[in-house]
Amino acid sequence: MRVSVGDCRLYVDVDGLGLVPDGPVMRERPTVVMVHGGPGGDHTVFKPGFGVLADVAQVVYYDHRGMGRSDLSTPDHWNHDQWADDLVALCDALGIVDPVVCGVSFGAIVALHYAVRHPGHAARVILDSGAPVTDTDERLAMFGRLGGSEAVAAAQAFFDRADPDTFVRYATTCVPLYVRHPGPDLADMQARGMAHANLAVFQHWQAREERTYDLRGSLDRITCPVLVLAGEDDPICPASGSRAIASEIGPELCTLQVVPDCGHGVCQDQPEVGFAAIRAFIAG
Picture 1 (cartoon, rainbow, N blue to C red):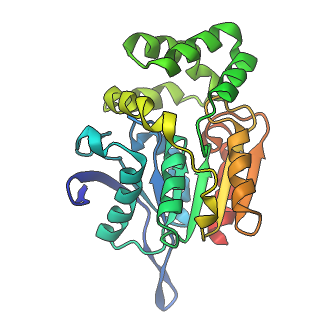
Picture 2 (cartoon, rainbow, N blue to C red; picture 1 turned 90 degrees about the vertical axis):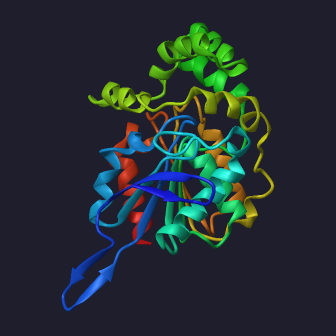
């Protein structure tokens, strides 16, 4: 279905029940709102993996404006503030109160902006493989450790300017280094996402938001509990960024779990570890 958030419609899908029978009453379960990566990708990267949470929560997926099956909108609306505001507008439209917001990769960056920009809106926030600022030097160092000089060169070219040529080289040389334990359906999952991919959104973001955003110094605005997950071998959102997030939010609100032998997207690379942490966090 598509849900209006004012000037555009976002594609939404739902997994699991919001109300479940519990003896003589109906019990309301938490709603987990999934915020996907990219930018330029779509929510399908979460399927079927995050469906395992449907036994403890209702899981809501959506595509960001400009991406997937949502309305294209216009480039002047392709920015972190707008994507964060869209998350609030979507919850308002669907009647979701006190969501558990779970962002992965670029989605974790959007979720972090949302938590800073709209403190008190979420009951809990989960950040899997995010970053408070782009650290290109750390990224290149990680690619060098995992893939050598060829990976560094491909990453540097793509980071400098994303176009079809640098994208193909990056996709074949660097993307395979993202995860340490690729699942048997990884290729199919990536192919499904490419069907509605929008490179123009990525190019717009890379030339602007990626080079300028910096949430350091503002994370003390966050008021809800936060779970930060990171892979020790993540080359695109290195674990140093997750450690910085956790350090600034502080141990009173933030739980950090850095997973060894794990790359980008803990719930993709080490699902048993990632989903166990999320289940415990949702349970409170």
